[in-house]
Every structure is written in C-alpha cells, then in structure tokens.
Length: 96
Image (tube, one colour):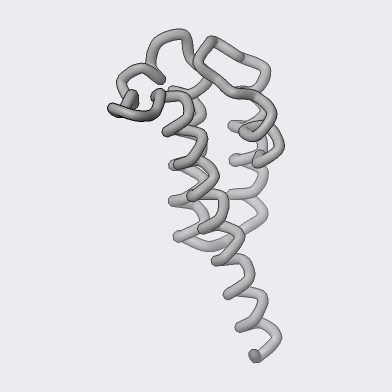
C-alpha cells in the first residue's frame, strides 16, 4: 500500500489504485485479528477513497498543503501505526 501512495500522487479518479488499496486493506484485515489494525486499515481505505477521487480530496486542502498531499501523509501515518502494532504483537508472541 505504501508503494502505491508513494508513487501515485492522487488528486484524480484513479480507480485502479483505489481498488488495489481497498483490496489490500481487506486482505490485511482478514489476516490480522486485531482491532487497532482493523481501525487503521479502515482509515487507510477511507482516505484512499478521497485521495483517488476527482473532487473529494479537495475538502482536505490545508493552507500550505494540498488535500491530496495531506491524505497521502495521513495514509502513511496509518500504515506506520499498523506496522508498529504488528511489531508489538510479534514481540508479545515471542515473549519480549
């Protein structure tokens, strides 16, 4: 998902990128039985819906940053949260 967000700037109706992110979020959610991860993956899918739209990204415009860039940053934050949570789960599983 991170590769898509890094290499696809959004700000237009990119159905292929959106479909792929939604598909990956569903697959990850099915593979990971954790409420925090599920919440963050839902955030990723929601932000991606706006990012890869013709107009919805504009509602996220900020004074110094475009809505598309803001959404990309928020998606990256959510993905980082998932990664961090998976590390915590793995550490607990290994008894660290």
